[in-house]
Length: 265
Image 1: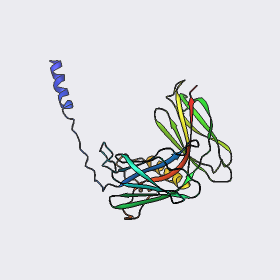
Image 2: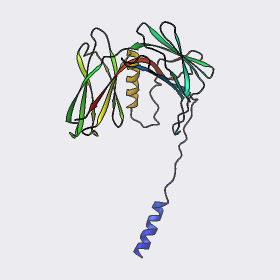
Image 3: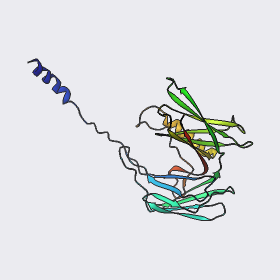
Image 4: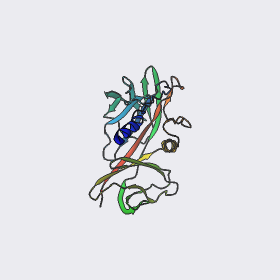
């Protein structure tokens, strides 16, 4: 009898689950442009990729590619490099080379509208060494990596650092207090083991791209959950010259990059 009473007591708890469907207001899709052209010092003719997608409702699992666009990048000397669509929304070019002589211009024509952006090619210093420091973090179980480089003197420099292990971690730096000095970026990880190979990357970036990333980082840390209205739309350097109100998201940039692989001790 006690067992039967317990079953009837639990039945209301098991049957009260209800799926709540959240209806979100959907806006008109916008073009999203991922256009980071990166070169290493050794390779000046690496394949470059520009990815075009469109915004989608929050609960959609797939990101729609923007197919059928015309994508070109003009070098400072006026040479045009056409990017051909290799996969849906992925546009590639195998012949474009970096240049320090002036600004590059990207032109994209999609759905009867034209988008433009300009940016200079930014160089970077080489990564020199990694210093490992164990026993870091609040609980003392994290490993810290100090990534050393030498900042060029007498110029303002901005950097994007990337750390590759199980997940990707990013840092952005400026040389306001380290101009012309040997300095380091640092990452910490509590999941690395002796013998693991981790990879670091440094990219030289422009001041306005640094500011763009800084704003993105600030807004991504805002409390309020996924449905909170962002303080403002974060716009990059891409302009819709046909209809400025229908702006695109994303950024066009050109950077030198350097890699360093390290084996955890």
